[in-house]
Structure formats: C-alpha cells, structure tokens
Length: 189
Image (tube, rainbow, N blue to C red; front, top):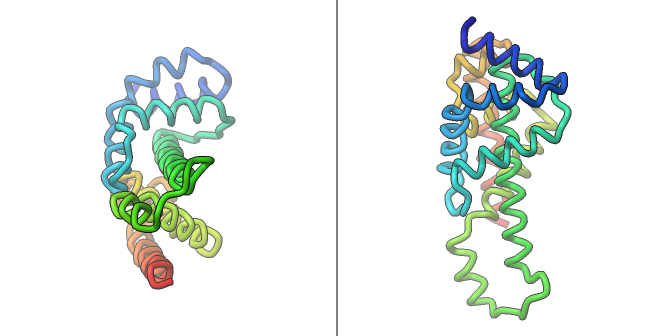
C-alpha cells in the first residue's frame, strides 16, 4: 500500500472515530506538517510560536472538529488553513494585550516603539484581505492559501482543486493583485 493510500485510509478511519488512526497517521505526516508550519512562520515573522508548537496546536484543533477529508492533499490544505487561523488568533491575542486589557496606559511613543517590532497588524490586515477575496473569488483565495501559506506547488494546488496549472497561475495573479490593492489601501489610511 502506498503512503498516500495508507494516509487516505487512516483519514477515513479517524473521521469515523478511530482515535488510534491519528496515532498511526502522525508519523506519516509530521515532517511535512513541520515544513508547512515553518513556511507559515517564515511568511509572518515576529511570532513566538515554534513549528512544533504550531503543528501540535493544529492537531488539537483538528481533533476537536468534524472534518470531511477526502485524501492526503485535502488534509494538508485543511491543516495549512488551520495553521494560518492559529497564527491569526495568536496575532489578535497579541493585539488585545498591546491595546491594554486592563493594564496601565502607555504613551504614544512607547506604543509606536512596541508596534515597530510587531507585525501582527500586518497578519490581521492580510487575513482580512484574504477574507474579502474569499467572498469575491473563493478559488483564488484558496490558491493563495495553499501555495503561499501551505507551500504547495502549482501542480499540487491544481490537483487538490481539480483545475489546470494554468488556472492556478491565473488565480495567483488575480489574488496577488487583489491583495496588493487591499493592503496598499490599508497602509495609506
């Protein structure tokens, strides 16, 4: 049985409630998930999370949810999306702390100094822009997430979405243009 077929079977068993399937599945996917996590962390510097922590948190979140995973690629798409959500949640929590949450007020200069080393606002703006793109062009948003945040190649994205590699390239162009426009608007305001 190939590794991909074995993983697909373990995913099916896990979805049916077999907790042991997750234990069997972990060695098959852990190294690749750490690679995806490092890709996410590289894209958004300034996080205190490590790749291992991000993968472990992703497993915790996926274990507590009801999923309908078709195959190996679909699992990695969902895992990558979960990792991005974790990073966004982490950035929001950092912003809440930065904005006060019951602590003594700080001067504007202190707040600027703290913000200059903190890119969580960038991640939140990116997440908001991706959400807007998803409402307008769902596939383009999925392509961006899978390629840039999930580290999938054009061919892997094309296979996961059942479209051609040319469509993936076109969707990437559309998505990048949309994000560039939205993010430049938010920087100028």
